[in-house]
Length: 588
Ligand SMILES: *[C@@H]1O[C@H](CO)[C@@H](O)[C@H](O)[C@H]1NC(C)=O
Ligand SMILES: *[C@@H]1O[C@H](CO)[C@@H](O)[C@H](O)[C@H]1NC(C)=O
Ligand SMILES: *[C@@H]1O[C@H](CO)[C@@H](O)[C@H](O)[C@H]1NC(C)=O
Ligand SMILES: *[C@@H]1O[C@H](CO)[C@@H](O)[C@H](O)[C@H]1NC(C)=O
Ligand SMILES: *[C@@H]1O[C@H](CO)[C@@H](O)[C@H](O)[C@H]1NC(C)=O
Ligand SMILES: *[C@@H]1O[C@H](CO)[C@@H](O)[C@H](O)[C@H]1NC(C)=O
Ligand SMILES: *[C@@H]1O[C@H](CO)[C@@H](O)[C@H](O)[C@H]1NC(C)=O
Ligand SMILES: *[C@@H]1O[C@H](CO)[C@@H](O)[C@H](O)[C@H]1NC(C)=O
Image 1 (tube, rainbow, N blue to C red):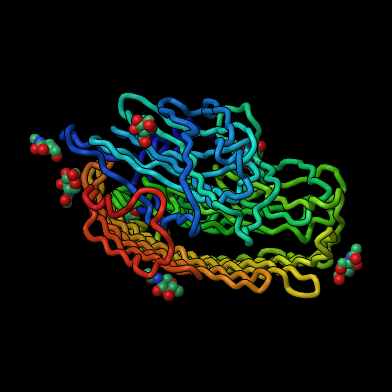
Image 2: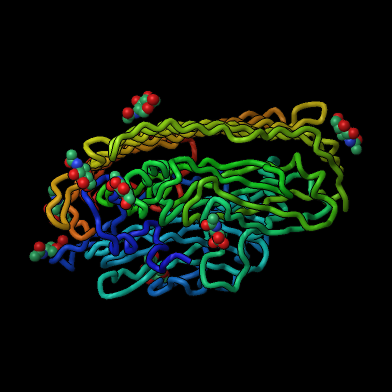
């Protein structure tokens, strides 16, 4: 197992033990929060936030009916069992689960002192509901909250269960921050059941580790040959199945997209540096067949690159990590025999450590006890991965490119008819990693392009969905002015999460489009791997539009202060939003 300290979003304590050299390649860019020698204790806490669109209850719905699920202070919690509490469906939900319009899970927390950013997960009966990273506190205190739409878990929310939260924190005389958190469920209802309700799964099966255990319920993957699996029985009357995967990367693979190939590390005798090149992919197998993959978004946690960049605007996805859906309906024919089937996760080129688990969303045929099906066609060629290396001593250039696709078609016959479903994914990836100035400057420019789609037909097309995600990333990291154990680091980060979804469900067309991009730069003075001085500035453009309206924000922050804030909420057609109002956060 990794050392206790490594189980932060960033692995910083681990680094502190290593001597460092004045090399961008050697500085692993992992830092806890700053602690100023003197501070004004009566100053109000700073509100941190991730720029995101509000979660709007559907028109005409009523609520919220809110229930506090858990309130806990996470002090010395590393390597201890998750905090658990019995879950009873709130009375308002138990009375009318069929008219639920929206369910929102809200995490709100505060912290004061110095602490690393910590990864945490929230599970209900083993089904993961939220993967998140804490904000790093400051002496005067911080508060933040994150909300996730959990409507798709209505089948689970409507029955008793057990909530588990794992946030592995460490407390000592230096790292004093205790995270105090509340977990609340907000529910909205349709006064009368609407004619067209989204069809959420009837059953959600966890593919995670079972309690009791002394850690999160995620699987822990430590290298490229380490695969983790669970065997499950699928109800024999299932007619649709979608796997929702949660992924986060830490410690030696936290900044995998900046890693050089091993040949560079070996040639320069830097065996303590993490390598394996800059390409990673999660592969999901069912009974040995690759059913899909995840080429993950490069989430930068709140202590990443230069922690001053993420105050108080946090990195895209860091408070609410993206999840990835893989439709396995074409394979159902092989899974309806009432026997156990093997669901397996692995990570190409992985270094220690990846946290992965999944929720299997199943739709059941209530009018029959048995559906049947068959896989008709399946294509999953080998990964095409190419690395062009050119280097002399510490300077060099590495160009890594990869592409892959999978496609499967199968039919399932239920009382709803004989439906043929095709699911496909197409990925491409390029990473250019350049070291100059004797390895003191590193520039990485990477793009991941991921397209997936599902098409279901039974004579006519019943459902056609496509999701196209593009993740551009540019990082400049330059080290200079090394004097003894002190050095300066200049950083530039441009990171984007672009997503376009189209859906045609029984001739009802909908689309959504998101362009979410951050541009950040900063410098800092580091002494003994602690940030002693510095400045960070981040600008973020968030533009979202869908069939019902749109939402945009243009926000800038510098050194804990919002420097500008423009909102373009004018085109929204929905009612006022749920959750904290960003406008209230201007004066932090
Ligand atoms: C401390 O902060 C409070 C609230 O912001 C302010 O009124 C007070 O003047 C500050 N004191 C000092 C010594 O700066
Ligand atoms: C948690 O809830 C309690 C009780 O309502 C409240 O006093 C406290 O301030 C809340 N803490 C956070 C971090 O939201
Ligand atoms: C990979 O990790 C697993 C699990 O920790 C371990 O048993 C195995 O020896 C490791 N393999 C290599 C090649 O390091
Ligand atoms: C790496 O170590 C080997 C063996 O100790 C030595 O011959 C070589 O010169 C070293 N290379 C560099 C770049 O320091
Ligand atoms: C369902 O449809 C597929 C494709 O049209 C066909 O090959 C299959 O035999 C049908 N299954 C049944 C049980 O009718
Ligand atoms: C390049 O860096 C290495 C390792 O820090 C150092 O030994 C070497 O002297 C440097 N070369 C130049 C030209 O600065
Ligand atoms: C990254 O590379 C892409 C494609 O080569 C290029 O269009 C883009 O301008 C580069 N980005 C930066 C910030 O240099
Ligand atoms: C950034 O904020 C810190 C803490 O408020 C302050 O001490 C420092 O002087 C500020 N730096 C700049 C360049 O504004």
